[in-house]
Image (spheres, rainbow, N blue to C red):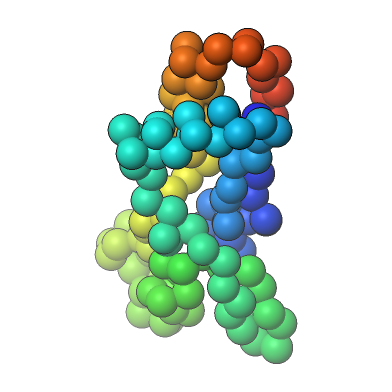
Length: 122
Ligand SMILES: [Zn+2]
């Protein structure tokens, strides 16, 4: 069992299009049960394409809708510590790894055939 993402967001560096893969059917059922026990909101981590000048980059759903190029007045405020910095609301690597660690412990507790777990980083 491992978790995989298709790249990182160009703006906020959060993982995009996450999915969990496993080999046997029993583990799949346990993953479905765990998603009901501890749901994870991945809607903001879907992958979109956005233009930055003439180039197209991968961005998350939240950055696709909300990210704008900062104006000169915002840049001036940022230099002296005024104004709000842009914060993405898509899930970060740490949030997803914490959820995945919980999933691994749940699967290892409830799995009967004792599958060997494979640990991968995102
Ligand atoms: Zn983003």
